[in-house]
Length: 443
Image 1 (cartoon, rainbow, N blue to C red):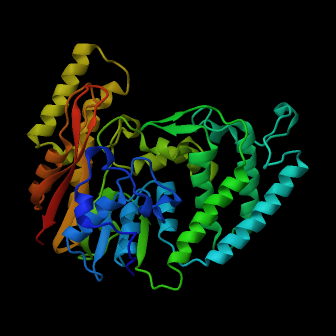
Image 2 (cartoon, one colour):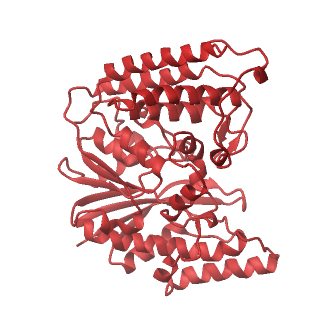
Image 3 (tube, helix red, strand yellow):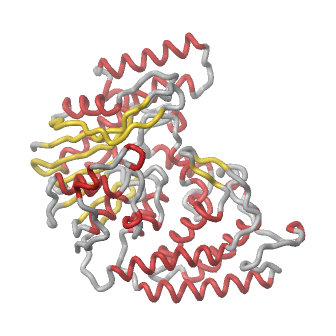
């Protein structure tokens, strides 16, 4: 199915975007995308640009091997094009799966959510808490629910205030009584979105941090508001035939284990960048509260399935670096980082891993591109959104160029590199390029 304007702007207008708004999501793009969205996700208009350029047909298949929260998948579905997403972060996988599941009765979702809300409000009232009115009494007098100790250790201190957390736990407990229903997972995703962006104390700028505490907030009505937005979006596509979307919980470095041979026509994706951003922190609060991560062991297993893009998910047995041991440029960058580390006397455990993680990152990308080849149909087109980095002791890493060189060695054609936008590096005060590396697989 293809939705009419205002879902799609004229392509000429999209091409004229300025650097300042290149990564912003447009108001008319909020349907489905804003059910839950990474703060740093690339925008829907970028996906549309390349779907158009690659002349993606309705009977084609679009792959996003680092699908995150599903921007490529949702945009493909809006165009009536089948898609496959690969994601190793269990919560992000869940978000993408739900955002592309439109086979839901919107009236059932709304009515059942109202029923859940009434039950949760009644429970809170019996505890002396009115969710519609700010609590002005002595919070210490309330018997507030808390996270188990193992779970509490996983989240940023101060991520959520005690009373809103208690309300979230009560609402979640109420929801779980309806777990067998078809709309349960959509309700959970709405709760996740409300939790992170409206109820918690988190802020993103772009790193996740803790802002001003919200001692009390109307949790139930905020959740219901997000439910109603879902309902409105689902009504737009009710009774339509939808393109198929499949989301696999898998490691993008092992695509040959999950993808059918010669099944993919187009790839549009944005892998993690090589920097010190721990991407699991972005989804940590909702992952813990909704039960996707329960302890440090769960977190460790999650990180092991991710591309090695930061020193917080590097492990002793990692050997992706063997894929690039003959790449002179990568070895030179790693040597420069290590030399500079020693000159500066940087001796922390993480700093000692800077050179190694650089090699592991590009080795992991080489492994990914190699495992992708069997799934590509002849003349498949690929677009990789990547960014230059200078996180490791201000040594410049030209990610797009290096990725193109690796792809070429693996048999891909490097068509060109598009400038998406520039951004100011806080460490060097230089403008870093975010680029789209365009590849082709002849087959």
